[in-house]
Amino acid sequence: MSERVYNFSAGPAVMPITVLEKIQEHMLCLPGVGASIMEISHRSEAFKEILASAQSNLRSLLAIPDDYEVLFIQGGSRLQFSMIPMNLLSPEQPSADYLITGAWGKHSLNEANKHGDMKTVWSGQDTNFDRLPSSGDSGGKWRPTPNAAYLHYTSNETIQGVQFKDVPDTGDTPLVCDMSSDFLHRPVDVSKYGLIYACAQKNAGPAGVTVVIVRKDLIADVSEDLPGYLRYQNHAAADSMMNTPPTFGIYVLKLITDWLQEDIGGLAKMHELNGAQAKLLYDVLDANSEFYEGHAQPECRSLMNVTFRLPSKELTQKFLAEAASKELKSLAGHRSVGGIRASIYNAMPTSGVECLRDFMEDFCKQNS
Ligand code: PMP
Image (cartoon, rainbow, N blue to C red; front, side, top):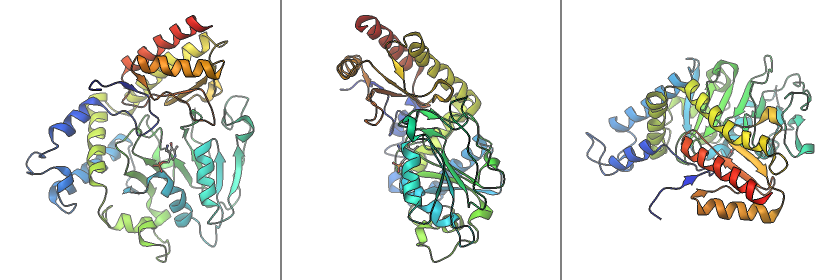
């Protein structure tokens, strides 16, 4: 297949075409360098400039205050599930709070429990994670535990398609957020957080680099007995170069953040575009609710991952096959939710969402 399809993959996911073209253009030779990004030392001036631009692009897109580090770490978001408790728990604060709003929150809790006895302060398990705490009337309330080292939550659950619209209020307890699947899709008040992390492979680049934005005071006094790579302060002291960093991933992250600033015009604009695109699909669900069943309660629907089911397994298979024949690909839902998941990250063109919307309308007419 030589033509690009509309790729609704949940991650690694669609990238902006102009970024792919730039990578292609500079694949053999970065301008002024004489070699490709994959062939130069991470200690070279050329790479150091790329890393510095990637950091400063993130700082300006998210207005990151000076008392926060911006780190590039390998190991994906899953390694953060462990690094967070390893660095942020202490003998004085040996436990932390977790809001469990879906599969990724559960995974993060399971890893954290290897380092202490974490408290689940809210869980959506009983309704198969179709809602969030305090979302409309459905969610229910939660309370932070006194002396918790931090509260961890997942701003967007990639599998279930539920997304927080507001930032949970934890008072003085540092807030830790897995922003893997909605990073860089809207402005964020970083000062409300202790730590934000996001693997790149949805909105920020290829797999292999994970961004960690962390308040400096939280990592300053962490024990040096931790394995070196797993101690945030070592990454901060070496400006993300304590070992060879994922150079290609950081380079692409720099290009994507250039694209967000220059082509899109910043995160408020990106959020507007994402909202308009998601509405196209949710409107079809609402107009045909006897045929399509949305998974998320309406008030916590994700702008990144639209999840819904059809009346039967046979119709789901038919939907996927007919969609694929129209070049609408990677639409199968996760087995725990079933049905369909359309991931419409930042780089999904509106034409792709319109095409899916038209297909959904036709499919409903022909099969109900
Ligand atoms: N958290 C969320 C919300 C995710 O969507 C994912 C990946 N799909 C992860 C964590 C795990 O990321 P990684 O595969 O980079 O470890």
